[in-house]
Length: 418
Ligand code: GDP
Ligand code: IMO
Ligand code: MG
Image 1: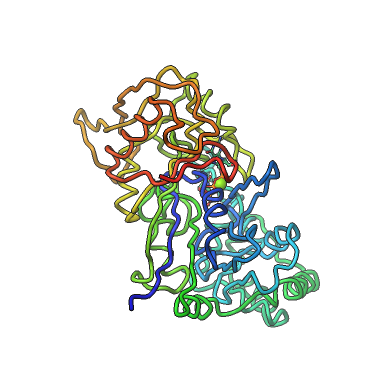
Image 2: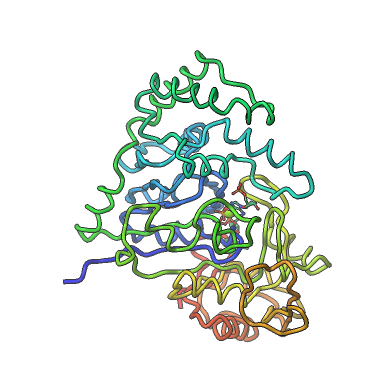
């Protein structure tokens, strides 16, 4: 008999699409929720009965007391950040597991990240400053440290000091000091005390769960346009944010992946620098930001806003193998007289309908549609105004992907399942 497969949630724009809300909502029906990449640069917001939770490293299944939450080997973990995040929840033992192969994102990684951004001046990427790039670079450079090494703080302490000695010349340029040995050891001891019981071989856990027919949900972080290979390089994050990243980031094979749902806002946002063809720098963009409360969950920065980019979405849908889209924040378009969709780009005087490798020089070509008064809070497709229904159909048609979920407020229940 064919085995049950793990379902996957992936961001298809520039992050912050509303992955947290959907994972939390779906988690009620899953036994296990797993993160496979990214770090505490992610900020996944969940609203339940008016109470807000902001998650960075802990999977968004944590509000479902029955779900087991896994942080896979592909994630970079800041012990300091996860310890703080864990304080929001009781009884995580037995329902949160951290891969012993996940790389550590230590305080010096954030220092390196921030120093590099400062040195880049107006060419800065606009990172979250959380040390993500440097932590992944160390992993790829084979000079990183893994969560499993936290179980032996003394040894790890001496290895970190050795790392500082070997990289002294670079640290001098970046003006970063070597940590004090005693302080470092105390810190590592406290990480072991607080995190030790959660660190394990999560690949085995996952394989056992797959073998025993458990329902597994994989939660992406960031979004496709921020992918290290397929995003708007170099204005990207440092991990594989596309669905394929879930395999390496958790230790499962492609045949273990089942349904893929791409999470997409009914418009577009981006935090940080880099190309964003459908950005609206006028009144409409400002209004989208205000109606959508578009401020970063992790850094509080104002998000850049613009219209739905169907070219980018179609590309992302193909890259990720999306079976369907979850169209989020439709309510944010309420009250606009007209809404626009970017249906193609112009590049060097020619109209193109694919994503070029460099998005810097494309100009968006829009189609305009009539707006609607109110979709907020709708829970069935029939409740949506006719123009909003039409908008959903247009998106399905141009992105060549079915819309399976529509979200009309931050709350769990204000969701239309098609
Ligand atoms: P994530 O990183 O993909 O999980 O998304 P974020 O949590 O960073 O950003 C999405 C924001 O939109 C959060 O503040 C959510 O509470 C909010 N949100 C999610 N779905 C909806 C929706 O359908 N309507 C509105 N108005 N807000 C939503
Ligand atoms: P979630 O999971 C939106 C962006 C940063 C910056 C670029 C590189 O909440 O969707 P990094 O700190 O990763 O090196 O920054 O990536 N970025 C995100 N933007 N949502 C996120 O996560 C992001 N994580 C990173 O703003 O442009
Ligand atoms: Mg976010």
